[in-house]
Image 1 (spheres, rainbow, N blue to C red):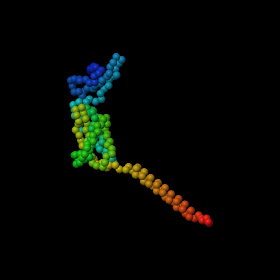
Image 2: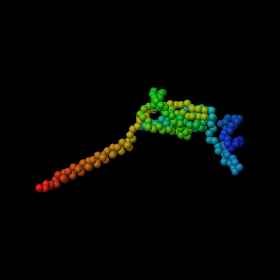
Image 3: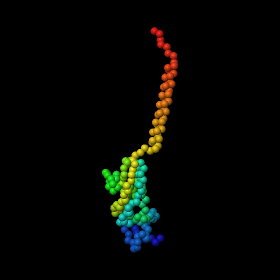
Length: 196
C-alpha cells in the first residue's frame, strides 16, 4: 500500500486530514508508538461521514401474550455512512393509529444492539417507532401499530394447576374411602355396656 503518515501527540484523540480526491478511496489506520516499539496498524473498518443524516430505521414487531419484540437490521456502516451513536425505541397506547393515549415510553439502546423486548404490556393496541441518533441529531422515524393480547396463563402453568387439582381430588377420595371403611368396621364390632 502507498501510505502517508501523520504524527500526533499522545494526548490527542482526533486529527483533521485534507485529501485531494474522494475520501471513499482511502483507508485509515492508527498505531501507538513509543521508544520501545509500535502497536502495529489498526485499520478502521468503517468510514463515517459526520454530517450525513441517517435513513429511517426499518424494523419488525412481534407480539406474544404481554411481550412485544422490536427488531431491526444491524447497523451497516459500509452502506449507511452516518455515525450512529445509539437507537431510540419509543412506544405508547395507540389512540387512532397516529396519536398516543397517555404517556410515551422511551428507551435508548446501544448501537451494537438490534433488538429490544418490552414486557408486561396490557391488552391494547400500541404505536411503536424506532429512530437512530447520529452525530448531527436524530434520524427520521417510522411508526407501526400492533395489537398486544396482554397477560395470559402459559399452557404449562394451566397444566400444572389442573395436575395439582387432580392430585388433591385423588387424595380426598382416598381419605373419604378410608373413613367410610373405618366407620363400617366400628359399626360391626360387638360392644357391651358395663353393668352397674
